[in-house]
Image (cartoon, rainbow, N blue to C red; front, side, top):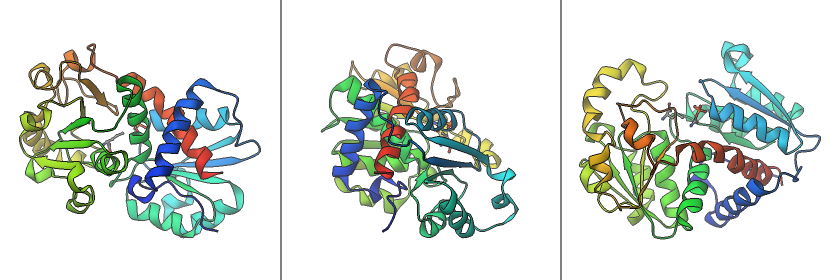
Length: 296
Ligand code: CP
Ligand code: NVA
């Protein structure tokens, strides 16, 4: 039987995604579920992490399982053992694998050869676990996702890609503003149909939005491009003026880590409209629901 991988939002049936989201809310209130009793989850990190590392490790413990955390540089994976062989070996020893990888293709290779579920904990293409936590946060604040207007401002990056995929699955609209040079992947954008729209103008995206979202301008792996990115992305900073174009009750999201004075002002991220620390906490609950689904 093919394992239930969680690699991308668009790869999962929308009905299943909605069930996972409902379970995230339930698990936040009920710590008694132990579906991972006597099971182990390997976590592989090729890149830095605070939230993903701690929320997965804590979540696996809370579900009764054993987390095994490895920096890829300490593994033979970091000495060119293939993702395929890594998958074959880990599948004999653990019950699921979570990986944060540089290349999305490596995660796909791992999943293709694993006989246990593989969860994408961020790649250069996407960050689906983040978006499940974001949607939980929005539902808590707004009561629904249906027909909401969300705005993505800044870089058309991995987190943006998963947001675009979620717009179609959860039936909201995502208005994206990025510089043309940092436009999200055309295929992902096209896949959202009329649930996502793009413009280079941040004012167009922010106007009337219920939820305003941004992310760091310098994603992991983009450090060499920093000067060019800073000059391109300056006009997309989420500040009070941009927030004033959104709905008066609009809320602000950022997956963190945040860089105040760059992609967002301190006034916005530390102000009353910000939900960023609820969002960070919800990584725990959302990923527990994802793990439970993968292993059910
Ligand atoms: N948002 C997020 O994935 O944070 P970390 O990089 O700290 O895991
Ligand atoms: N876009 C960011 C997200 C970090 C959680 C990055 O890839 O570094």
